[in-house]
Length: 117
Image (cartoon, helix red, strand yellow):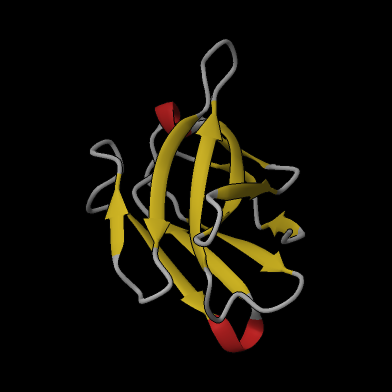
């Protein structure tokens, strides 16, 4: 089971940028697909972006063209670069690690992102 710690959240004005980081304990070089999800107040947790163990990515329609997910396996870290932020991006963002062999998900504690003028 991967241990995940997110960082990089904060408050930003609309149109601004943030980069979230997710540090994983142990090796995520192989065997794990990594992802970001978010949960806004009063709403269910929703998918944001995913990067597979071989580097393939996919995104929620709401963030396509604005957010970029990447991973640096040597540092056991996954990133989410968020540009052109909108108020509707305000949420707690969670990092996830899906173990490919058994489809088990590990989650971080979350980091708050607030987009407001």
